[in-house]
Length: 114
Image 1 (cartoon, helix red, strand yellow):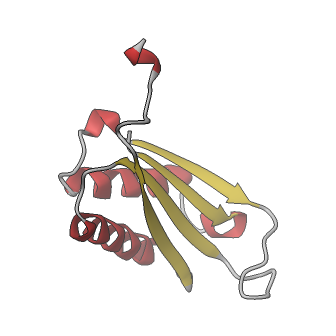
Image 2 (cartoon, rainbow, N blue to C red; image 1 turned 120 degrees about the vertical axis):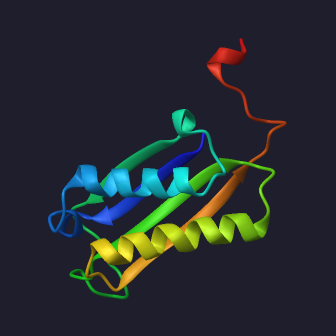
């Protein structure tokens, strides 16, 4: 925890090294001060086919962050802003966005809790 899932058009990641994208999101998550670096997980999911704004050739990057509840709206907003700004520096893509979703601590269970 937390999990950062990067959805992107396959064409977008051809513009940059996949590891650099993963590392950039990881680094922004670390620099936010909200998470222990050893807990951060970042995954990249490229899509060969997509329809964005009614067009098949619109590239995109969208980050879905799943974090343990308890952070303020301002903290989550700052995290989203920092990651989108960093991705904007890496890509010449019009459609870059991020969402943050909270896990409920009361319903979260991990194998290490057995």
